[in-house]
Amino acid sequence: MHPIEMHEVTGEFATCWQAAGRHIQNQVQDGIHSWLRADLSPPFLEHLSFRLGNQLFFIRLEDVDGRLDLPGSEHGLLSIADGCQGHACLMPMKKKLFGGTWVPDRSGWGLIDARTHAPVDPTNFVTDEKIEMTAWELHDFAVQVVKGQLEKDGYELMSWQGNPEVDPAIWFVGETKRPEWVVVRAARFPDRDGQRPMNWSNIADGCARLSKIGHFASVAFVSTAQPFQSENEEPVPLWRGYGVHVRYEGLA
Image (cartoon, rainbow, N blue to C red; front, side):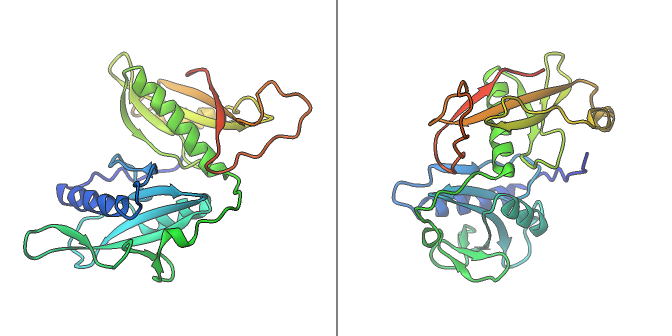
């Protein structure tokens, strides 16, 4: 169990965030098709994130005038970018005096490197190189699979996060109308099942104040170039942006 900041957003931040997202979407002719984070549900490591080709970009907004209440922290931004082997970016935003609209303070994409503050054009980083998905990426993918099925089944999601070092990954309102939690584990072929954590009792104790109803979710992945039934074969790497088969059989 790790404490995480459940920072709610203000209406002004939401307006700024929407303007930033629209600006980024307009930088590509057909728009960004692979948004990783495009919602305002806490907790926040980054404010926006997307995949372009074989590269991942994680963005934290900044108010150049320092008046906006920003959820999350730059430390969180760096942690998810490093864990996913992606690019940590800042996006300085400014509210216009006339009209009150939010616009990027920098030209082009409006992004700067979080460490060097050099301008960032995501298209300059995209290559033809195959990059294998990191453990963090795969865990976040697994969380999205479970979250999507819960939503499809009509449950109300309370919060979710893709940090593999934080349990549980998902909170939702169960059939009793009370909070329930889910620990998620991803498996990469040839493994066929995620492993229930050894510290399950500690996780349950940490969640007991809010709920004693917990679930485990195993989500297994294999490349579309290789079926789960393959025997005695070298596993095909799970390349970033390439197809995968997913096996998820529900909460346990």
